[in-house]
Length: 263
Ligand SMILES: [Fe+2]
Image 1 (spheres, rainbow, N blue to C red):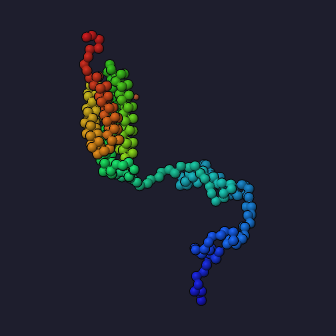
Image 2: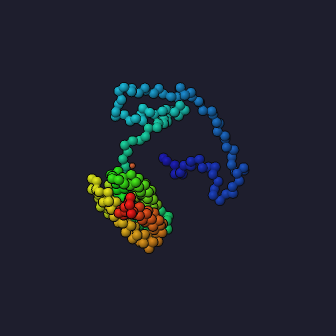
């Protein structure tokens, strides 16, 4: 027959809740546990004999970490290795077009809207950078060298701009367009022919791309300011618009038909 009284599990020395706590008088002498020195094993005794990998006949099905694993001498059940975990595939943890919640004192809808506008500008900025490089490579004729250098300089500034826009999107909790094939789907800049155009046509193409960006950027800057996202407004005005205006000047001057040797 089981006992009706519930068993106690070593609680007989716990004072009732309303009792006065008097440590010295109330606590019985607790027996000190005898600390025994752990038996130290020598590394040689603790380490099991590891099989020597046969390097001549590698087993392709075996993980690399199995052969690079090191047994720890004083921790017989643990081992370490420095093999990177390769070929890992996971799930998407944030969808493009969504924004995470950051403590920015900005409404979700504002951040979502500004990320969308910034991603359009980011896609255009990436495509313009690609066009600068394309035309840097394809440049030719008597002005080859200065234009070759100029377009590389503009591409470098465009790369910095791409990073600034992308990091603004990330700081708003969004996902920046990264894959150039994704950028190609979003951009409003027309695709250039795969071949080579005449030099003035290449420069005009770049100027038209810049004007498309400026039109979109001015509108996006106004909307961001209206919504109270002054950080995004500042990135668009200080970085995108000012960079584009400067680039337009440098390129447009090369389309002025001035005599080079005689006035
Ligand atoms: Fe180059």
